[in-house]
Image 1 (cartoon, rainbow, N blue to C red):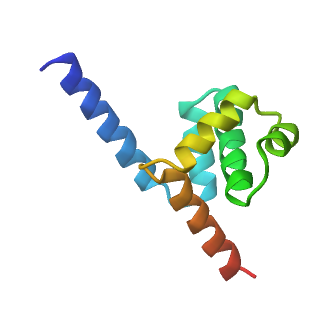
Image 2: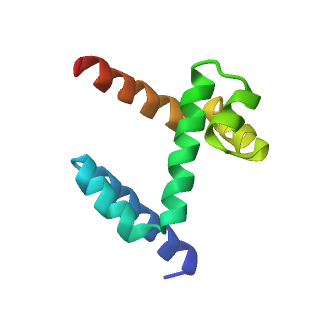
Length: 102
């Protein structure tokens, strides 16, 4: 088996692990095992940048509020408006979940 095949299998295992998470506590435990504290902070910051951009905030306001660099804000904006749609999907689901709990 080639290194590329092993890499693909590893990615599939990771994706499967993410889908297995059922609660915020389980998600926290998995993130703490997979990532450094700094990586978790970076991921959290990027999601907040995406949330603010989706709500119409300016790059300057987002950068000032989150502490994200202009490069990070730009990169998140590109992804937010890109083909994959991950940020939009998650933000929509978080919004739905929030409105149901009110």
